[in-house]
Amino acid sequence: MGEVFVHRPVLQREALEALTGGGGKRFLDGTLGGGGDSAALLEAFPSAEVLGIDRDPAALRAAAERLEAYGGRFHAWHGTFSRLEQALDDRGWPDVDGILLDIGVSSPQIDTPERGFSFRFDAPLDMRMDPSTGATAAELLNTLSAEELADIFWKYGEERFSRQVARAIVARRQQHPWERTKELAELLERVIGRSHQHGLPPPTRVFQALRIAVNHELDELSAALRAAERRLAPGGRLVVISFHSLEDRIVKQFLQHAALQCICPPGMPCTCHKQVTFRILTRKPVTASSEELTANSRAACAKMRCAERTDAPSEWMGRSVKRL
Ligand SMILES: C[S@@+](CC[C@H](N)C(=O)[O-])C[C@H]1O[C@@H](n2cnc3c(N)ncnc32)[C@H](O)[C@@H]1O
Image (tube, rainbow, N blue to C red; front, side, top):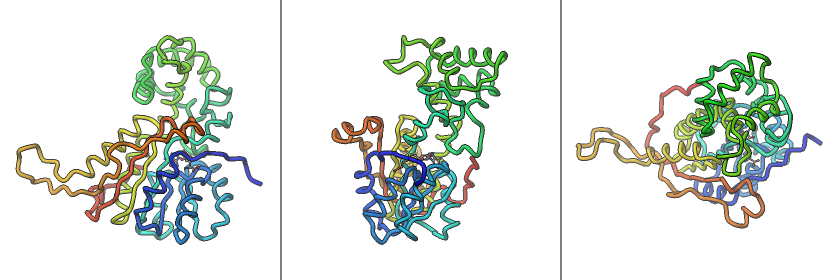
């Protein structure tokens, strides 16, 4: 028996319905997690194959065990979804009929104290989804300038006390380098207090911001959307489920641009040669039903957007993928 890895997928029925129109031969699950969505895809499309990507080796192990019964129909790839083209090349798949991105952290990541994602436990300040690579949260706190830290807290957490917090972090590290979640949570309780947080515990926003910075989450998403445009077959479906407004905005703006026929200034003759690369299938994001909300409070912030690839060439063809 492997490690216990329990993650309840969000908006799964809606995501499967959205992916159904895409042809259903080859799917890429860019956020494999515990394999719940991949299992549902393999069940719903009995002759389809799924390539599952995750940057977290613990998730890959759990999913590989769970999906063993599907034999050669399931393939796992360790890495980030911004590099989904490498994963497809390694498998020899030129394109896919559906791409699912259920972004964010999984329940096991948040609930495993030593991963350092949560201020509910005292643990090393790590927060890397892939613990084998990249800088930890502690390393960011110990090396970035007060301005850089304030920027992260404001941009990724909308923390109103970003500057005060950043200054306090830099002052504190002159005595002791940052190491533990508890130490950071205590400083945030002191500097932020409870006054403006709309009921959120004071460390919430800074912890979220640090997690996004440690894992380059927004750059990852932007790069994956472009890669998806390059590698979805005509008629293929892209489904993205996101959990906060920064991510949803990136998806919305990407799809709005992709769906435009022309980007010339209004009133000018068209010279842009823009082509529609995606047809948007969800004008408004799909949110969880009341039944799902009752069963899973994590679904409350989830927003799903879906689009269908046209046969126009990708606008991002030939542009190199930024290495993250
Ligand atoms: C919300 S969970 C997905 C759960 C999954 N749909 C299921 O059914 O269990 C998100 C997963 O995506 C992974 N992840 C997040 N960002 C990633 C990235 N940029 N590249 C690869 N994996 C990523 C996380 O490690 C986590 O396991």
